[in-house]
Image (cartoon, rainbow over all chains, first blue to last red; front, side):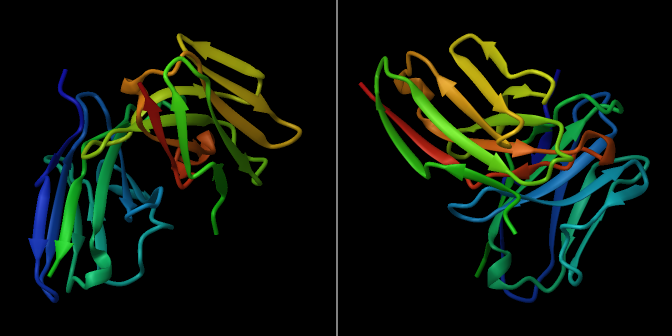
Length: 114
Length: 113
């Protein structure tokens, strides 16, 4: 049973470019969460999605960041016009469609901005 | 605003000793308190979790103690081993509002041989 798959594992972008991070949840999981981890910091919640719906985006920066979880395919976190401060590890987690199940995390995408 | 405060930032314990990590929260609506273990280059892995209707939960060498009135909870690692060396995060969430986790800043644990 494959876990949460994130790709790419490492992504390098120049300032002003776009970054696309992908997350395939565990089989049977329909809830996806994105978190950002800055060096020496804990994970910060960004957005919570179910298939075709954004449920909670209270942790998402208002500009340049967007997320989607289409009916088919992986969830995508998109960062437009990246800046140096976007350098971080981005983790995706998934959970099944029940309220009492824990979140399982992928191994993250390390985004570096040159 | 950090909703979950974790201490210490780092911890060194000798093999066989007890590692203790503490967390405190303010939001009384939190009703799920997991602990995650993270190794370098990996994602956090769920270690153990507790709900506020119990004061203690034990799984193997790992125990969570929960004090609802003090709004504090802690992780105890008994008989700590070098393989336990990792970063540990406490977290809290509200289950009926989506389960988004609020993490502490983490504790870097080093268990010396």
